[in-house]
Every structure is written in C-alpha cells, then in structure tokens.
Image (cartoon, rainbow, N blue to C red; front, top):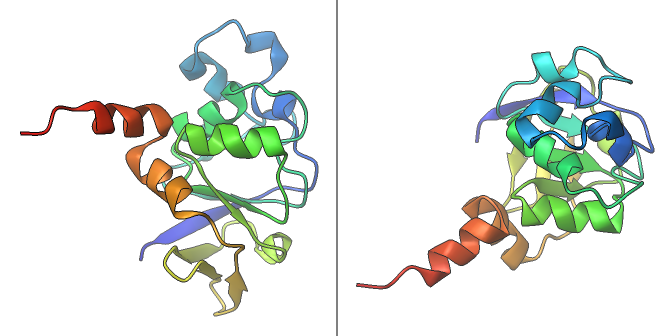
Length: 162
C-alpha cells in the first residue's frame, strides 16, 4: 500500500465548484485547471496523481454534470473520502473510474497528511495510526474503478476471447 497525500475540503462542495459553469463548453482537460479554483485556487496546479480529497458531508451536491467527477479523474485523484455524497455525483464518479469512500470520520484527516488505503479491509490509516472505517463498496463498483470506469470495463468485456 502506498501513501496518498490529503487535500482537505469543507462540507457541501458542489459540482459548480468542481467544474465551473463558465467552462462547461470546453473539453475536460480545459476545465480541469479551474477545478475548485473558487475555494482553493492552488488545487488544480498542486494536485498530484495518487492524492486524495478528504471532505465534509455532501460532496458533489448540485447539478448532475459528469464533468465534476471527470476533472478529478483527469487530475489523477486516487479517491474522494467524505461522510456523504450526492447520489448523482456518486454514480458519475464510479462510472468514470473515481473511487469514493464513505467514512464518517473523513473530516478528521488533515491537510497534507499521508494516508494509506486498504480496499480489501475498507479502511484508511492516518499518519498518526488512526484507523477510519469506510462503508462497504460493492465489488462491481470496485471493479469499475479498477477498469478505469464503466466504458473501459464494457470494452474489456466486449473484446473477443482467444
């Protein structure tokens, strides 16, 4: 298990903050530099592949825009950890291959803290050794994330077998 750096956010992060409406006519790679700029202007430029977001409740509230999850995938986020997620954002994220972990104690994770994710046991270990337990994630959703999203998973299933 490798360490993942935490970016900490408050509650009620909405899809317009993740993928601002002014850029919605652009491709995901052009929207990504504006991800979360209204609350953390340095986020998109500073995030690195494998980093995670730890947030308060209601992550992904707002519109059903798929780009809100797509920009996080494009930026290389490994996971978003929060006590709760918008239902539409939850499904969009998994469809695009973004892992969401529901953990009531997510807001206790600290900015910049290295954490480890154990997907077999569905737990997070913080830098100081605290263990946070996550709600179960159905196997088919974990498989979807491992495949890089629903479309990749379907392509793989459709490949002719030798």
